[in-house]
Structure formats: structure tokens, C-alpha cells
Image (cartoon, rainbow, N blue to C red; front, side, top):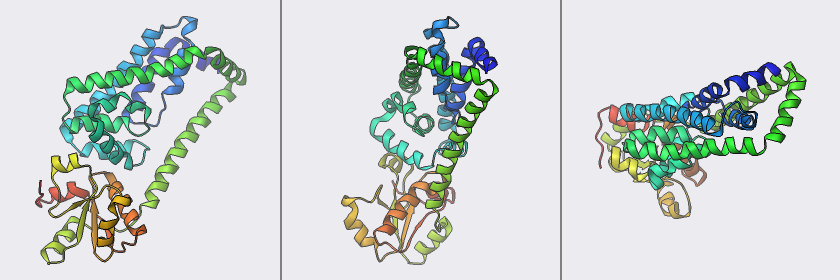
Length: 309
């Protein structure tokens, strides 16, 4: 354990940079413990508060800028990549879109404090073509606030943190094993939550070609678009679709109309997570024949079918 402490003391800035960058990219490597410990070591003179803060902010900005540029270049495809890298449920895409459509780029100031939001929000900034200057300004504020809180907590409570480090140091190799076990537990819990989320949304899908065949054959299913209105205005929607983002008291009249109809629900999120969530809610309210559209609006457009705006 003393080797680990010595490593953090001598290579703290490099370790912080790497740790923050990996978390900001979306990997399940929490950076706050490292930032807090590094903050507690400031009093020992290995680095200053400003150096540590600048290092963490620089790492976050670089990783965020990469996702921003990828979002601007590749569009919605980036969100699917993100959800493969991250252990957060795919529903975070819809939640991020909802928050982003309401608050815009200013939501980046608090984005890193919301699990599953920050990385999706930076990619979404590129997809929505937020001006680079505005993105960098709000992202810089957010990264500085996020890292500053962790480093400040470490410095203020350095005595208590020092006691914990001392206990781990006495444990020697056992202390390292405790840290590794805690990290493994964190990853397992996140993986289990994701697996449970997918299991809850397991249901039959309909392909875009089958939906097109239904429409061409004179069968008119009710089509529900669960995306935020900004996304619908930007990408268009399937002709005849009705907007419904969640089943609440204000949607009961529409739900009553859907009970005897065949209903197709679609979104623009990975694994049709948002569409499946709304489909489950509709089923709980008595709608029997409801299916998410496999691939969502992206699959519909890729097949060459028309959209309305």
C-alpha cells in the first residue's frame, strides 16, 4: 500500500489527468476518489490546488471536445457507441435530450454531477450543432466546478482522509485488495443495474419494413413518437405520428383512444430504450397491442422512407 501512496504522491497530476479523462470518455472509472485523495495531499507540497484543478479540467475538456466533434461529424450514431462504452442505461439518452431541450448548453454547467448525463450531453452538443464557443464556455465552467468541489473536499477534510490512507497503508497488500474489491463492486452493481434495465424492457419489436407494409396495406396503426419536440423538428417524424413523451394524467385521453388500436412506438435512442419504456407504460394502462419500432427513426430514414416536418 505504501508503494501506491508513494505513486500517488509523485505522479498525482498524471494519475489525475488519466483518471479524469477515462471517466469523461465514459468508462466506469470514477475520478472523484482520486481527486479527493490528491486534494488531501496538497498540504504536503507535492502540487498546488491550481495545478491539480488545471490538470483535471484540461483532461475533462479534451475528452468532452472529442465527443463534441464526433457528435458533430457522425450524428446520432455516436450515442450508440456511448451506450456500448458506458454502463449507464440507454434511457440516459432520452433524459439528456429532455434536459438539453429545456436548458440548452447551459445544462453543461451541472452535467458532470448527474450520472449518465455528462458524456451524452457533450456528444449531443455536437449533434445539435451548438456553437463551439458556447460549448467550451459552459463546459469549462462545469468541469471547473465539478473538479473544484472534489479537490476542495479533499483539502478541507485532509486529516480524516489521511487517517483512512494510514489505515490502508497499515494493511499493506490487503489495503490494495480492499480498493480493488470496492472498484469491482462498483462495476458489478452498475452492470447489474443495466442488465436489469434491459430485462425489464424485453419485448417484441416491429421492423421498419413491416411497418411500411402495414401502412401500404391500408392497416393504419397508431404511431407514437416519444422524442423531444426539438428532435422531431430537427430530424422530422414518421407521417401521421403523435407525440407522447410519457404516460401521465395529461395523456389519459390519448391512452383511451389507443386501447383498441395497434400501436407502434419509436424513438432515436440505442436499443429503443425510450420507446420500450413508453410501450410498457401503455401496456400497464390497458393498451394490449403495442410494439417499439426496431431501429427507431434512424432505421426509418435509412430505409429511404419519407418523414414529415
